[in-house]
Image (cartoon, rainbow, N blue to C red; front, side, top):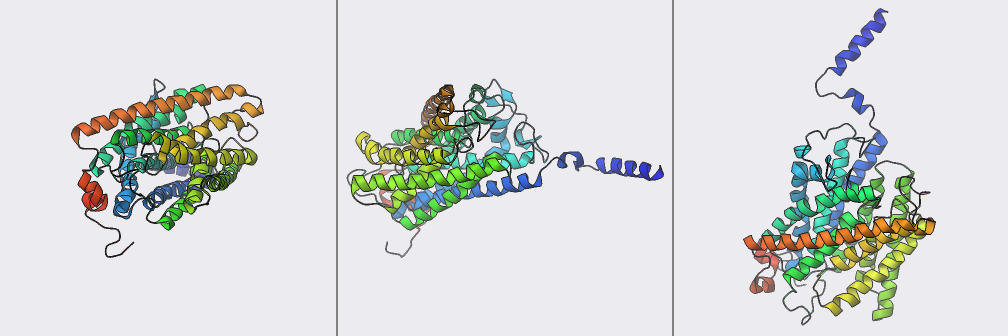
Length: 437
């Protein structure tokens, strides 16, 4: 009896120690937590990978500025997410369109699991994982406006866009109570939230800024394709965290998402190269790198809902249609999406979101839905609504944000600054000082 009483009093004493959440931490699954934290690091690496992917495709006098547009977002959005972004995106629902403000400064976002979003990992682990998605999404837009957008204008745009476009969209699709989530739209890892939103916004930004000086009249070839391939490899590597990590557990669904992610990337790399080979007569390294990214984009919304064979189809189609968007549609329409953010992310993300409605299967993920080819054509409805809503919202909001930013600071570099290069004129640096490239 004395031993029982002593044990009970000791347990009560431990539970009263300030800052120790003994009961809460007992519900944390260490394997799931380890996987999500590793996936968070993988997704973080994707943004520097994107910086290299984009950096190699511009002219040498703009490589540092191009890299900076991605790298600075790591700092900017990380702070914004802690202060208000996470609360707006995932906080308690307000009218099915935005999260509330109760989690500002991560108040209430602790080390215990949150049953609504992450039942087996610390709430802060889920928050950090979602942060990396917010970071790379706005960085993707920079690919459309490189070599001509002023750095101060991009900073202001990135902050406003993340707060006014990304955060609400994330709540619509993933937030508890979000209207697209309630509608039944499936988006496992960000086809609408990340890729359609960034791709469409990139197109609008390219149209608002106008074409680069000399576009169409002088060659604007990539200055360092090995850098681009290195970036593509890092994106492919990090995408396993992007998609498989979205299972939020070290389980079979994560393994399935891992396999289909790799499969679609490989299929799209092959189909892009083949389409290019037939169209232009030669397969290129840039085409292979671009194709794998197109496949990764397209499989993202479907990655937690489809099996390997549908992933092959999704990838093959993505490689072809994204190539056509870049090689045929862009020249015919004459817009200057410098690094094809729209052609890859806007087009690929749209295909992936719709393909989810075709190939989704509850046999892969019981929490999802069956698609058209598994007996449920009605799933195409929510998928189409999600696509259209994202296109319209991202386009209109981006246009307004750019016009507002333009009232306070010029959006575009002056002609002489653009000719000299943005590395020197915006940052006072040169990437290859003294080297002849």
